[in-house]
Image (cartoon, rainbow, N blue to C red; front, side):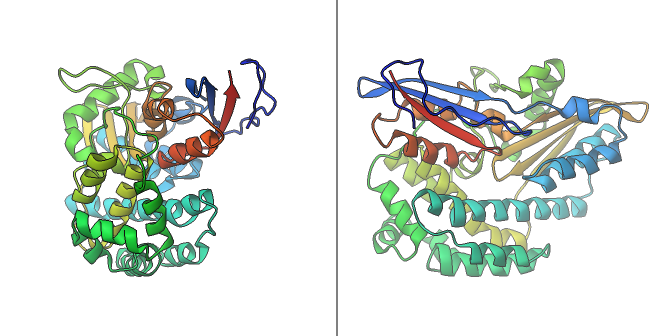
Length: 383
């Protein structure tokens, strides 16, 4: 962390960007509080350049290979968007299979955040053994459900996920007090005070609430203005257009445990982590039975299709326009561009933090709760 008496001086510049880009967070503090927040993203918008001129099946394969995170969701979104552009929508059985695949990837990503990233930020050892067990379950939904249920019971919750989910606010408070797992104790630390990084940025509707009309609206904006994918804003009918937050919190905002946390402590880092844990606890049941809506597909016109897929980080959207059997236009609207918008949820959350020696660590906690898909850095400057 850099400290200097001159706002323009930086003694510890952030590292150079890698090929996937980087998110740079610069916080200027002065007078005991936050003076300014700046978020710069160098994530390249390469969908049009990479996909144009390719056949749809090539685009699907490329989407699954290019992205180091959420590769399955990227391939699913590409396949559904290109299929819709060709006039083909998935059959119900096919859709369930795709949604199970998206859920399994989402579950492993959630587990990584809760078993590795968050403990490491708190100075605790990561639970790599549990994570390896989840990976060893392979691609069988029922096998992963069994391993996940055991991991939740033994490592994350200290009780069976069904019992934990069935408890009310009083049971949740008892869980925090008892602290049966490192995860419970981490939540207890956050619950002891106001949830850090609270914000009021509107939530982007989950894919089932967004509906085909909303999905088509976002796709039309992306096609009309390519820069929209780098800094998206949206407003439903009659609402002000502004940045939105997407992710587990948008999907689980109405769950009783999440709603009670927000009502008591605000919508900050703890609320996002709790929504992630709730979603992970729900996953075994979803993988054994019918999953909730995780995908949505629509056609804009005769040769243009759009698909939305829920991922661990939020709603991922692919748009494909075909011409003579090849891709003429392609757009990808990723969750990170919503959550790390320069005027979006992260910016608002960071602006509310107190200054001081712990500012950088708190800022990292808040940024990680929004789960960027690329490397990020935090720099603090004293004004």
